[in-house]
Length: 214
Image 1 (tube, helix red, strand yellow):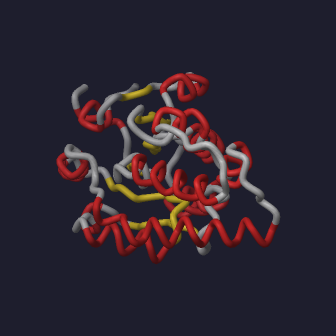
Image 2 (cartoon, rainbow, N blue to C red):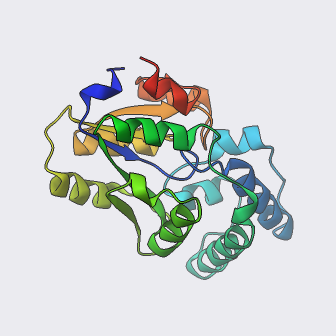
Image 3 (spheres, one colour):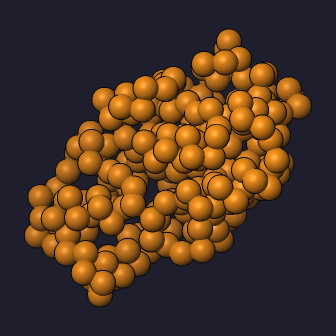
């Protein structure tokens, strides 16, 4: 991985990369599984199964993802998530890393599959807005992916290939980075296991602090 000072802009994923919500998501899924009379999963199993688009993850767990039920369980999940999200927090080193990168004169943004209004609210809750020039979220709750938004955002940023680093925690982040011409690094603490992240064959970090150590 290149020294972070060599980049002009950092694009951050939010869920699982800055905000530590893996346990929250696994807990909610177990509630939905129990209601559907399906087997519960551990956090490790969750990280081995979770994927984008998330409808495929629900399907893999045995949920009925027909249109009517998919809308119902999606709203159930988001309702539970919103009700319990403040019991969870950002990673302990997240703000120190954001602050350090900001001190280098490198601009930063968030590109998330989280609904825009919810993203805005949670980033503001942790008083992190000052580190980002833009928060880019989705206009719905279905978390199909963020490629389209990524392509629009990279075009608006106007940086050249090799000037932007995307920091995420899933294979989807790797795919998005490749599609938009950004370098990428994956955090192993998030929504997918190390074994799965290795499929991307890109640098992996075990803490956000590693970004500013070299």
